[in-house]
Length: 390
Image (cartoon, rainbow, N blue to C red; front, side, top):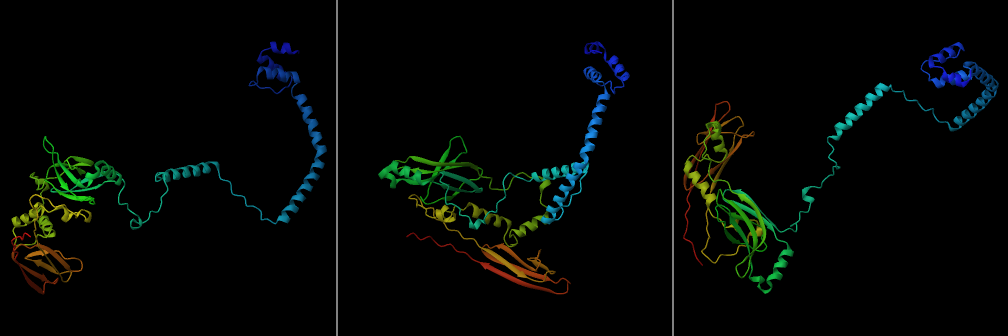
């Protein structure tokens, strides 16, 4: 058949013709492939070509075997010269097991990456070996609340700022005064007062009022009385001075726990009434001490005020009682049992007002057979003398 006739035939007709010609054809073949296969005459020609190739291989086989033997001998000689041990072949890993190992590795890496912060850990030198700078070259002031009646402040004034002010005032610079201005923010109208500080001072304690909002500023008072601000602090608020007046039964302290807290705070002075102890504590907080007496060494230089003198002196005393016995003993002080340390020692702190205080101490052995006691009596007398004005 001619190619034109084959093209006019349908695919089923071509398949039927191929089977009649004993040509191996399948229904999955394209029509064009079937036509080409029929044109070539089917597997007869393919069988002839395969037979020719097979005969050629049989003729070339002896030559190839001889060449292979020579190549094998050369490889054996080279291996003997190098004298290398044969490489051990690693056992093959099944595909499923390999995928499981890869998944476990990925999971481990994911877990480890949770603790990676993006930077390598570096061993830092001890704090003692680090040089802390005296300043950071920033004009600033910071205010911090210490308690209801005291505020702590620290600041830094750069040399550039001082040089700028000195150039600005010229010959009047020595007449300028460094002050710490305290702003009272309670109320509609903002009030303030100034505290003269030494130019070398870097911190100060300020006596303030409870439950009040404050803001501080460090600056200069010019010869004309004008305040030049250098830095302004954050706003702070002091807490209340007394115990809260809110009574909530759910948070009341049991009597036994209150007694332990009272003993730990040094309240075993049975001769002094609770009102007397409270008065002593309030006196410590309310006493107006000069700021230079409690500030750091940089703030000790205080400029004397030309107005009324604010010089005061107060003295308070305390008593420390300590001793020791057997760890299993039972010890009472002024009739109250105290807790011993593991080695049997103890120490108590008492307020010591004017007058006489009797402190009986008794110890009972662990087997309750022997008892020993020591009676201690302390007398204190304070006398304030008239001030001397020189």
